[in-house]
Amino acid sequence: MSAVKNLIFQDIRDENESSKPAIEIRLMVLGMFGYFLLMAVGGLWSRDSNMLLFTAPYLLLYSAIFGLTYYGQVKMAAYGLNILTVFYIVVSIYYMGWNLGVQHFLFVLILVDFFLPYWSLKIKLFYVVVMCMLRIVLFFYCRFYEPLTEIAAGIIGYYQVVNTVSIFAGISIYGCLISSNFLAMEKKLIETNKKLRHQAGTDPLTQLMNRLRMIEYASEQMIRCDSQKGISVAIGDIDHFKMFNDTYGHECGDAVLKTLAELFQKVMHPYGAVARWGGEEFLFLFSESNGDEAYMILNGLRDEIKSLEVEYGDLRLKVTMTFGLVEIDRARSLDESIREADQLLYNGKENGRDRIVY
Image (cartoon, rainbow, N blue to C red; front, side, top):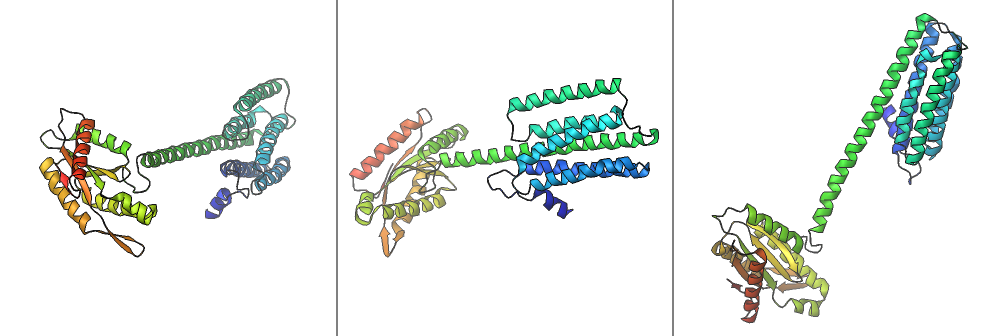
């Protein structure tokens, strides 16, 4: 079983071509192999040597089509599959008549062609019209002309069963294949959308929320938060950050930002969220903390920052921060509270830095 699976799903050699059309064609050809073997069994059962001679060339030709899919000739294999299958249907009806049921293979062929990427929609619709007309022509031909070969009444039922089962099996297999493709595409689309949403809301340097995502998050928290519990916001700014960039270079400044971001995420995780607000500024949202509670948390964070050493090459750099903290008044907008916190931060900068202004 695993050998058959490997045979079907082995990638084609042309790296620029999708393997899905090759897999569809291989499934169709393997189905035709099984079909012709069953037809040959009917020939042996009825001792009809003509049926054995009739099926042998098709097995060879379908084998050639199967082989083309392993050499990057999938489009040629698709043309060959269509031409050979239509030829088989026409010849079978011409020799053995309408009652055999091979004309229904046209439905399977149309289904396969609609999901091959080699033809435009207009060509595919034109193909459907041609197949419909061919079926009508074959039907009326059989109404006015007798088949060249008469099949014994005892075996024709067997052939009809083989054709019916083969056609339903073909439609079911392709239905499952199409369904799995759509499900895989939908899953990939969902994962891609999640990834894009994360990227759109994440600061690439620190991996914290960016300003846009924080505004969304804060607005959501203000709606969800229990009115009996407080919600606070703070803006923090790294003291003398320009000195790190001017003295040691921007890579040093980036190292300071990333080191602090890791600390912020660890400390803020139980209490709310933090975002890079812009440059060396960060916004802290305390989802269920009033101003006093937020001050205690922020003061603990400030102490950890002061004891922190940022490693940059052989350097061990000390950092301090200044914060402006506001308990959000639900009667006011979020923007007003953030502006107030920003003004308090500015006051802290003017009055010596390394402090929380509340």
